[in-house]
Image 1 (cartoon, rainbow, N blue to C red):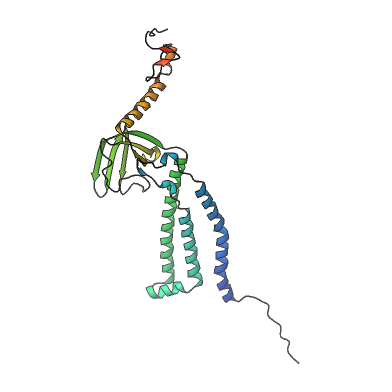
Image 2 (image 1 turned 90 degrees about the vertical axis):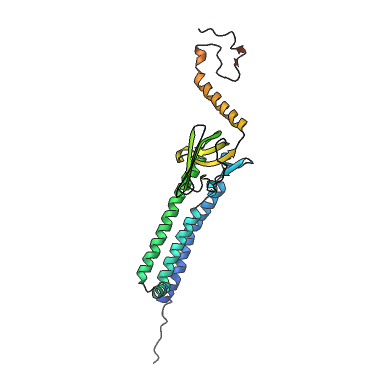
Length: 268
């Protein structure tokens, strides 16, 4: 009588499960992150340079904040974290490190996780701040001002701090503390000085952080100031025709509708 031998079902062993688990995990991660990478690439392609930050032949400084994208760095850091988890869990690498460093494996894992969390938190906060700046630029929250630099001061200490005024607007920065996408004269050049006429594009809601500096001539700076004064005067005098019929709000061309200011001073 021959004993019948029944073939065992095709069931993977525990070793096979350990070997296939990392592969399955990476397939799941690929399905999760590939669409996200595609969306980020599309966002970068749609992002256009602000016309106010386009460099010209007179540009002394222009920020690169619009070209900074930390999303890929975040995804890379997350991927590194997952790879480390897979290596520590499914290989003997962690025990090998424990033997070399003569520390318990759990201590090595805790230190590694702590370092990763610090790196992720720092990168995440920087990414949020940069996105905030980029959105402010896209929302046209930048302002431009022209004039000559006055009251320039340099304060030396553990770091170098500069302060100056342009047409009454105060600018102040530090070569160490100021964010790297704002101007801070980190090369300690002599361009910033009293009497230097410039056009500055800045963000008022970021402590007047400087995004662009263009060099302009004295005559051009004075002309821009005159045009600004003219526009301001027009806004302040637009209601006077109610009292002086032939009063012109334009201080550059005192004729309005064919009438001249001369000989028309009667007030009704």
